[in-house]
Structure formats: C-alpha cells, structure tokens
Amino acid sequence: MNPQAKLISILSLLLGTTITISSNHWAMAWTGLEINTLAILPLISKPHHPRAIEAATKYFLVQAAASTLLLFSCTTNALFTGQWDITQLTHPISCLLLTTAISTKLGLVPFHFWFPEVLQGSSLMTGLLLATAMKFPPITLFLLTSSSLNYTLLTIMAIASAALGGWAGLNQTQIRKILAFSSISHLGWMTIIIIYNHKLTLITFYLYCMMTAAIFLTLKTTKSLKLSSMMAAWTKIPSLNAILMLTLLSLAGLPPLTGFLPKWLIIQELTKQGMTSTATIIALLSLLGLFFYLRLAYCATITLPPNSANYMKQWQTNKSVNTLTTTLITLTITLLPLSPMIFTIF
Image (cartoon, rainbow, N blue to C red; front, side, top):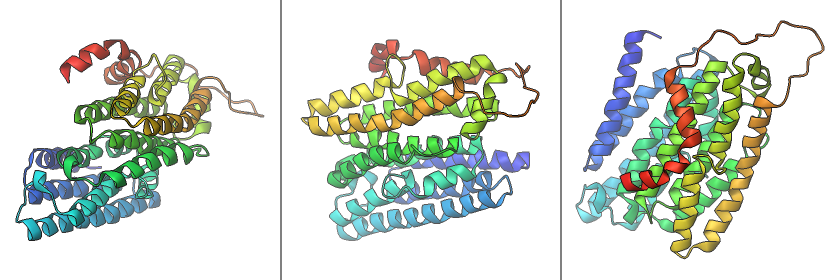
C-alpha cells in the first residue's frame, strides 16, 4: 500500500475517533463514525485478495446499516423532544434504536455475524485495529447515553455475547476467528456493567486492548495464522512462544495474571448491585472461553506438528522482538499486583 495513502487512512482514523469521543451533538458523532468507517476500508482491502475484498464489503454494508439506524434514532429523538444533545436521548423508540445501532457497530450478539468474517479476511495489524481502536468510539457513545439505554435488552445481549463468544470459538482452527469470538465475549463483560460503573467498563476495555495487542503483535512476529502454524512456530523464537502461553491465559482471566482483574471487579460490582445470579451466569460462561484459550496455549507451547518427512526446522532465528511487544506482554502478565494504583488513577 502506498505510504501516503496509509498515513492518510491512519490520520483519518485518529480524526474520526477524536470527533466522536469529543462531540456533544449527534450529527458530529455520526460524522466521526462515518470517517472511521471510510478510513478503515482501504486498510482491510489492502491485500488485494478476494477474501479481503469480501471482508471490506461486509464491513461497509454492516457499518452503513448501523450508521443509518443511529441517524434515524437521533432524528426521531429530535423530532419528538427537539434535542440533538447526546446526553438528552429520552424517547423510548430512539433509545431502542440506539442500543441496536451501537450493538451492531460493536458486534454484540445477535449482531455479531460480520465480525469474525471481517477479522478473518484482514491482516493481523488491521485485525488489531478492528478489535481494539474501532471499538472505542461506539463504547464512548454507550457511556455517554448509558442512562437512556434499554437495559433489559442490553443485559440479554451481554449474557448472549459472553455465551456465544465462548461457544462459537470452541471448534475454530483459525486464530483470527478465535480472537474475534474472544472479542465478542469480552464485549459482553463490558456491556453488562456499563449502567452501574462507567470507570469499570473503561478499565476492562483498556486492559482488553493491551492484552489483545500483545497477542496480535506476538502472532505477527511468529507469522502464525492458524493452529497448525502455531504448533510449528515454537522453533522460531522459543522464549516468545513460551510467554505467549501466559498472555493467552491472562486474556482468559486466570489469576494471578492481569486479565483476572477486570472480571473480578465486574463480578464484585454485580454482586453489590444485587445481581448475584447474573454474576454467577457470566462467570460460568467464561469457562467456555477458557477452554479455547487453553487449547491455543497448548498448541503454542506443548504440542509438536505431526511430520512423516524430514525437513529443516527454523531454529532460533535472529528476529528480535520489538520493545512495544515486550512492554505489552510484561504488563499483560504482571499488572494484577498494581491494581490498587489503578483504582487510585481511575
């Protein structure tokens, strides 16, 4: 891809995100989301492969439909109440349409079908953007309008996302699809607490972005796209592949790793709000996700690929791991003891 075109796309992503998260007017928020959609399309279709073109087309159609719903929601609210302010969304139909529109943009169940296919058709770096940065503007709109959202619908979608994110990832062999279903599952955790504690949703989102970025950068370094290639990747950088197991277990939410922190806090907050049954259900559903994280960790570190013929192994190549990957992996593994400091900051 032309470096100038790539720079324009990335700057447009930054501009669209900034406009959306800093706007008070629905028209400006909608404009920012549209800039984001148009800026990411060249990055998705960059490989010039039929699967990449298909992914870009699916992404455009779904995001355009969601943006139309969002615009219809805010114009309906303006028609009945005369308000274009984001925090003044009060009409019931508008609230329902907004919940549906932002859920579609995020990929919450049952509006999740596009996300694994788009992520599978994208490169690893574009997939990282789709799984992290592109989620930030819609989550910001969720936070700003949380008092107006249809909470019953939101809770049902959150539990369904946690369930399907774990269930559908069980039989996948493509790593990008597994990480897509992991993203859907984590979105369920973020959504279920959004009404009660905004800061907790943001902490969960930031930690999820950090852990996902560490995994995507590690996969890019080892050039692993499916389970079979992950089995053979341990000979390239053995130390990085061993640490990848801990990173995956952190994303699964096992103590004493960083990923345990947001799940622990969310379960604690739900219990405080008297939603013990909801906390129990979502905690049990996380075990489904734990299975495929363990499967990934097992393939990354313990198994060897079956080979009947002799071949030359790539043993400890000279490829160095960049500082960003090392820093993210370190934070992903060791941040739990620093949780009191995180509470103080937030």
